[in-house]
Length: 372
Image (tube, rainbow, N blue to C red):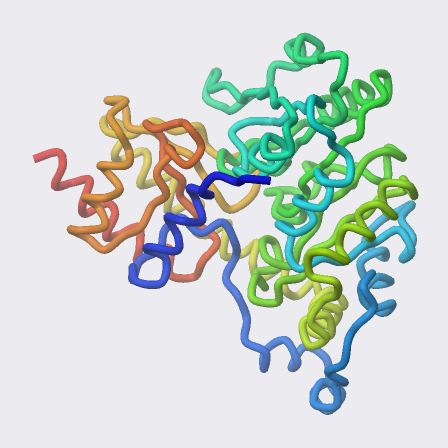
């Protein structure tokens, strides 16, 4: 398998930890270990006594039970814990694909959702989001036309990275019905679940609705605990589960014991964590809306429908990579060029961090200078 450079990750490797104003993060504000342990009296001593031997390759039983408690039909034995969502993505495709197979991927997407299948020798068709009537939309009627004789799976992500699009319940059910009718696996990237702007928007987990769905979750995004490197899949498809578990023997084998412990504490106290993160996002989105309104002669956007990201574009359709480079040099603000998603006039903004207002002030100062 030969993988091309991961454009987004190479960009962050070069800039993320040097730029003082990172305004394109895909995750929420994080927590210290001390703050996670403080969520539950008595666990600090338990954490200090955590055994540092090998862990269960499926994930600790305690953690899998906590994850399963978020679902309606998933049991702990149907949860497989990974070292972040990236490992789960890699293992999923290696479990299901052979050279010559085909998948359909909602686009734009995280590069590994296309790159890993292509490196295996599979074909990829993009089910592309369109900018239409002030919002990002999926063309549900286009989906049947993307089918091929060897289509194995459909890949979706809602709430969506990077656009902030979110499927309606009807669209979500239509997508599941499509997979069921055509005997497709469904990989549903649900790492931004719980960051909807209202509870009425929240969709069921795909694995609760469809026996051949795989729900992808992670501690990094909605929970803001990327440093734990804990992700998971939940599925009722036992054959697929076993294949992924076997491939995991060649990747991480098992997970970090301290990370699994902290993830369990965080999930047990997820209401507190999610309330704080949603409060941050709600406040920051108001600042962003006002900024975009004031600078509508330079920027166009479709406001996000859920999650901590937006994907505006330059009205001139100029290269946002040059825009981002100059912004970083002059104001030390980092945005993610849309070229990472093969959409060069766009750029990604992330508004899940507590210093977003400071980042935005410097960003808007740059836009005002552009107008002069």
